[in-house]
Image (cartoon, rainbow, N blue to C red):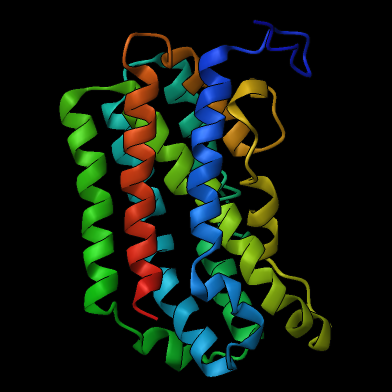
Length: 247
């Protein structure tokens, strides 16, 4: 059975096509969550509370990627994850804000005060999701499985983030327009974290997920590669749904 040809002239791998289909089903479940399906109707105070709690997951990003790097063995995968991590801190001079500083700037534009941001603490549900996310990653590092680690990094740190921020943007766009401001964090991350299908992922992709995906598809070969990929993504998604279930 033919699977066509990718954008860069490479044959589509059957396992990647099947993995993409499984991932698409998970993402459909994700965007069906009531927080997203009714996002335009959420009041500002309630929406800001979601964003203040979501910030704590964003603060985990460097730790998750650094621990992932420690556990990886594939040199190409390590290099790609390093490159993405370094983008979080755009220049060595200290003149340019980090991505998490950009997050705070966007929150202020959306109506949060700095005092409110600094006073926020993780709820019990948020803390459980943070601990669960790290546990999934730590287990993969203990097993020294590059496939699971790259699956977690790509899905937890890029694909789900892009989907979330795309859903958020439906609420945010009018607020930024009204403030005559440009989003420094949410909208850019929606784009550069965007989901590139594994079947067409390539090393020079414009998105983080595409570059990580190019490494991941090389790891999918094997008797149980697809199963471990799907099971790992399902665990990550369950934790992210737990986060939104609290609202």
